[in-house]
Image: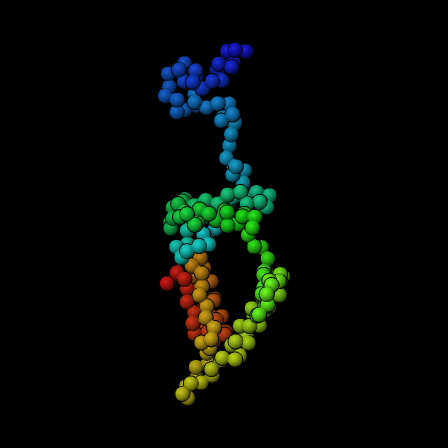
Length: 186
């Protein structure tokens, strides 16, 4: 009984083995039984939502719950490192006061109201289409221009080339927008 208790003490194991105390001899039973919280988790690759660099992230999740987010060591951009904002991605998603619904304050209203996402998206689409209809110019000085300068779009830096191509086609050819740019270029 006493011998088992003494054998469980890492200092005595270190003295008995003559090792430097940085290996297995320094571990308690509790330490040996510990494991990472992401050990049995699923991993998804993602891109950091912040700046224009596009750092790779590993998103650990299990049973529909987010467990951790860390830098992706296989990413050629950040090689597993994240800046302070990227490192805070987990808190961005799990912070209990994070807004998870659309809030809308009508013009001259004093209070916010909650809208479902579909209604909010319809309102955005209606306003874009109304602005385009109001400001669309078909010709200028006798030349066909077919554009509007009343609507602009600034794409996010996490968009890939294919997404940017589709956005450019939709907004310039589809809506006639002239002011289309991307954060990664700025």
